[in-house]
Amino acid sequence: MTSHSADNSAHISDNTLPGPGGTLLGKAALVTGGSRGIGAATALRLAREGADVAVTYVDGKEAAEDVVRAVRALGRRAVALRADAADADEAAGAVTAAVRSLGRLDVLVNNAGIGVLGPLDALTVSDVDRVLAVNVRGVFLASRAAAAHMREGGRIITLGTCMTQRVPGPGGTLYTMSKAALVGLTKALARELGGRGITANIVHPGPIDTGMNPADGPHAPAQAAMTAVGRFGTADEVAATIAHLAGAAYVTGAEFAVDGGHAA
Ligand SMILES: NC(=O)c1ccc[n+]([C@@H]2O[C@H](COP(=O)([O-])OP(=O)(O)OC[C@H]3O[C@@H](n4cnc5c(N)ncnc54)[C@H](OP(=O)(O)O)[C@@H]3O)[C@@H](O)[C@H]2O)c1
Image (cartoon, rainbow, N blue to C red; front, side, top):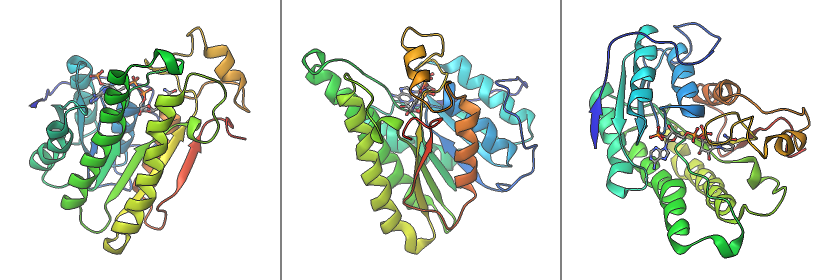
């Protein structure tokens, strides 16, 4: 694992509201997969609430550096860490590196995830191993490492999917299985860590316009039609709910759909 950072300011996304100096002043957050998409929007939103932020990435070094610059432009500290969630040592090591860089850890956002979709017969054992390594084992190991560092007020927020609530068609067995495991992990973490004042919650995005699921992709119209509001969501809309949970002490073991009514 390597870390790097940069100093110049940059604008990452239209991450509006609120301004610097919110509910997370003095807190430190780690967002896995924070170089783009929902993770980058979350890093920016947490920084706007006052948190210092570490982000992990694998391939998007330049994008992660842009996020670091944007967080610093808000007056917060930031670091980008190369850490592959598929690697057990790096998944846990990212937490240690974030604590080393920021001095503490209050919020872990388990955002890094991969989607491998396709019919049962097309999914290889290697597909199964990789998806479970990134989406499940990496989340377990990062959460465990974070819990060891967190004090009272710690927050573990994990990204699931609307497909754990309603699977709208074929092709989602592996991805949905992996994300459903995180519901169980979240509820069990809430029970295990509640006595220490640490909460654990899971956010289920619907179709969100990111590199993983672009709103102009071939399956986008069908996905938008499955929501009640008839459109894709934005990364900022998911980040807003994550930021709320980062500041909420009496919400734990809960699932939050940010899905435009996909599950309605
Ligand atoms: N977009 C949606 O419609 C949607 C819907 C439901 C749930 N979700 C969930 O929301 C989360 C974020 O999705 P997204 O749409 O923002 O994804 P995205 O646009 O594909 O971005 C993924 C992020 O995760 C990082 N990443 C990928 N594999 C990684 C690994 N092995 N280790 C560490 N980081 C890794 C990427 O870093 P690099 O820059 O190195 O590639 C990138 O920063 C995922 O857990 C996804 O399953 C998304």
